Amino acid sequence: MTDKKEYCSNCAGAHDCKTIYEQMGKVRGPSVVKKVIVVFLLPIIVFVVCLVVADRKLDAVTGNEHLRILLGVLFAGLVSFVYVLIAGKMSSRWDGVQHRCQLKETNDKDEG
Image 1 (cartoon, one colour):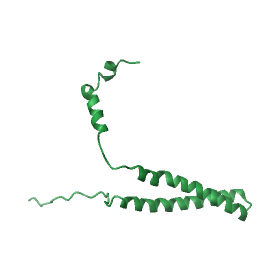
Image 2 (cartoon, rainbow, N blue to C red; image 1 turned 45 degrees about the vertical axis):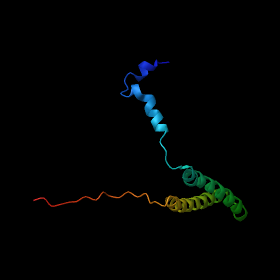
Image 3 (cartoon, one colour; image 1 turned 135 degrees about the vertical axis):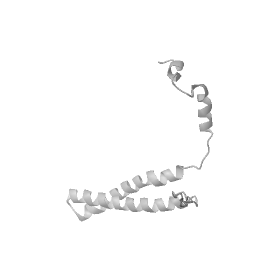
Image 4 (cartoon, rainbow, N blue to C red; image 1 turned 90 degrees about the horizontal axis):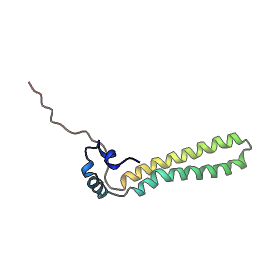
C-alpha cells in the first residue's frame, strides 16, 4: 500500500481534502429516487412483463417460435417506448418547473 503522504503529494487540495468532502456531503437537493425508479427501473419491468404476456398469448396463436419471439419483442418494445414517452412527460411536470435550456438574451447593439 502507498503511504498517504505519497498519494496526496501531487494534489493541490491535499491540506483541506477532508473539509471539501464534508462540504460536498452537506449539499442538499431534491430527491431523485422517484424519478429514477419511474424512468429507469419501470421501463425494464414493463418490457419484461409485456414480453411474458405476449409470449403466452402468441403461443396459442402461432406455433412458429421465431415469429412468436419477434412479435413479442416488437410488442414489448413498443409498449415500453410509449411508457417512456408518457413517463418523461409526467416526470417533467412533477416539480411544476420546466427545466428547459434557454438562450441567454443579450443586448446586441450595432457599433459603428
